[in-house]
Every structure is written in structure tokens, then in C-alpha cells.
Image (cartoon, rainbow, N blue to C red; front, side, top):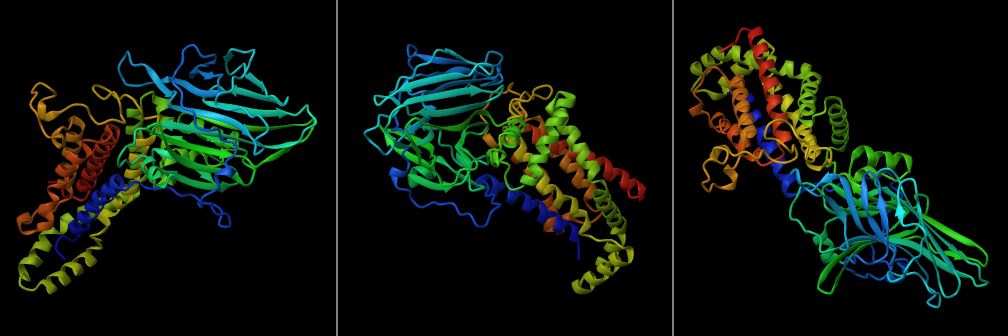
Length: 558
């Protein structure tokens, strides 16, 4: 069974390439369900059931329009009093680029806004709309000072909206309707997040588009799909609904104990513009004479920081809010990895160093398994002269050759496949770390040392242009930096240590193909997050050191 371990190693590496490619071409769609007796309604809901969502009204930024100013350590912006619309929000802790003069991230705009509404089937009752001018005595919203908006309709019903903000990115909107008249009527509370002409990206490993949890199940949909389907409707008990980018999220969480909440993902073309909207409406309630009813909605608008998102999930009871972060197939690994890296980053103050420490801790954790693997490789290398002797003796009898080889393995208590076990374990670890580096806001613009200013971006250097000194045009695939080259070199060295001391590789197609694996991975990984490449390079170095030690122990040094 000539070089059986090489065949298995090749299969593992090729599987890695295939899985990696599948992740790129067909990103995972998470579906998390903890209840088998609750179903998500995706049949069309009659439009009249979505009574609490106002007509979509587009508007441009008007500097003269009355607003309530938003001021906190994390946010700035304003709430337009016309329609009580959230359409101006800037994230003060994040920059658009790594440039020193980069502006803060502008999140909510007149083309990406949020509305809250109260409406009724009774057309004789005047209800607030996108054109309603709300009144307030406060002009500034801060974490210490909530704002109360009021409006009274022609029938005398009093609408009161209290807006508060915490120290991070969560608004609490409490709508209250008072009925001082003798008339009785029914109404519904609701809300919507509207986006005009979002950037409809192609294939990506990170979900961007519609996202929400309905009936404990994560429901995601991309903008191009909604453009075709027009609307996807749900009937849910609790949950949340919103729209997400790679790093940012706008979402509304309704009462988690209320059943039969209607929600949908909606598309409409207005004035030649593509309008995408997430919207929900609470069940209808009756408002009797002399009474009041109210509804509370949480509105999150900010970065998808795991710690903050998790705190909202735990403290506010927002169901599975952490699934707003696209953890991918290996949720059970990705989330803990992100926690560990975040903790290490706080400890050492550099996410790149945190990645190196993480790789070292992981190597220590896998030390027993890796040790057995390298021990098996060392024993295999020591057996190579005897295996060659068997091959020469039975070169015309392949069956006997394999039988004698397997007998030799058995006598020496060597498992040729055990050398590949760490690779099988590394596959989910690799993809989990890849997800962490791809989706987590904690990695965005996180610097390392030298030329690496953003661990979530590829190495910006180019070895084939001598780092820009030779400005000739080169194909994009060749535009790789120093760290991918270092990764390729360490992969090559590791491969040399794993290969047999003797044997004609030209006669073995498997071994011949194996020689190209470091080169293939060098170019493939050269265009992905530099943090991932740094992790892999350092992990290879640790592996080489451990492998050299085991080889020395068994006296099979080259």
C-alpha cells in the first residue's frame, strides 16, 4: 500500500480546497429551530393585515426640517419630527477607512431609515403618517435624557411616543395612545425599516440583506431574491426583524411574549428606485373611552459587536439576537473563538498578537493528538528503507507488496492514516476562524505590526511588483503579499518533513501533485484576511517545531 498516508493527506487537502470553494460559492444559510410544534407562515398575508405600516414615503435630507438631535459617546445624528423618522445616524467609534482623516461611519440616511407607526382599520379615525409633524419640548436625545413626542388628532385622541437611548446602540420606543373621548376604536402598533437601492452584492461568505428570528427560527434572505419574490410573510410569537450589512445591523424587536405578530420582507419599485422593507405589526387592540394602550419596541442600529449583541439578548430577552452575526456552519466553534480572541485582544492590546496566542493555545490543546500523529509519521519515515526493500522484492506482485507492507505496519504498530487526523480536526477550526475574521466587527480595521493595518483585509503588499517599485501590470491572482508567501514557505517545509526520506516522487502521481499544494494555497489565501494567513503561518511554524522534536526523538532527522 505504497504511500497510503500521502493519498489520505492529498484527499484531506483537496477536501479543504473543495469545502473552502463551496463556502465561497454557496455561503451557508443558518436555520436554528428549537421548537418542532411551531411553524413559520410563509404564505402571503392579506395586505390589510399589515395595517400598522405607513405608506412608503421617500424624502431627501432637509437641513431646515425640525429635528431632535441625538448625542451620545457612540452615536450622533437626529430624528426627523416630520413622521418621527430615524434617518440620520453616525457611528462615532468607527471610521469608514483606516486613513487618519477618515470620516465616521454614516449608517442611517434618508435612503436607509426606520419608522414606527400606529394605525387602524377605521378610516374615519385620523392616524399619524409619514407627513405628521410631531411636537416635543426636548430638542436633544441622550442616554440621560429621553424625548417625548406628542400629536393629537382631529377626534381628540392623544398619541405619545417616548424615545430613550442607552449608552450603546439601543433605542426604546414606547408608543402610548390615550382616549379622552367617548368613542371606542381598535388600533395596531408596528414598525418598518426601509432601504432604497442597497448595494446588491454577488456571492459572499457573509450574509447581507434581510435577517430576523421568527418562532425561534433564523430567517435570512438576500436582496436579489426578494426582488424576485416581492414578499415573504411570517406569523410569529416574539422575535425580531431587520436588515444587515457585513458589520452593521438595523433591527426591531417586538414583544417576545406576544403571539400572532405579522411580519414580512417586502420589495417595491417606487419612482424607478428599488425599495426593500422589513416590517411588522402587532395584533389589534381595543381602546375604550377614557383608557390608554401602549406598546414597546426595541430598535437597534449599530455594529454587530458580539458582547453588546449578547448583552441585549440576555438582559432584554431578545430571542436569539446573537444570530444577527453570521457565524456560519460551525456556530458552536465560531462564537467561542470570537469570545476568546476578544478576551485576548483586551489582555494584550493587539488583535494580531491575540491570534498568535490563540494559535499557540490551540496547538497546546491538540498536543496529544498532534503528538501521536507526528510519532506515526516518524515511525513511517524510519520504516521507509524496509518498505523500499519490499517494493523492490515484490515489484511485479502489487498484491503481495501491499500485504507485506501492511504486515510491516502491523508489526511496528504504525497506523499510516493517523498522520492525517490533525488535518481533519483543523478543517472546522480553520473555517471557524475564517468566519470570525470575515464577519466580526472586532476584526475590522484591527492593526497588527508593520504594513498590516487591517487584519480583516488581505495583505496589502505585492511581492511580484517589489512592493510597488515595479509598477507593471500583473494578473490579480499574482497580486499577493509577504504573509501569504511566508505561509507557502512554511507549508512547503512542513510538507518536506512529512514526506518519506527516499523514493522516486516522479513515479508517484500523488506525491508529484502534493508538491504543488503549498503553491496553490499561497495564491488562494493571498486574497483573504491577513489575520487568517498570519494564524496559518504561525500554526505551521509551531507544527514544524513539534514535528522536528518528535523526529529527533525517534532518530529520523534528515
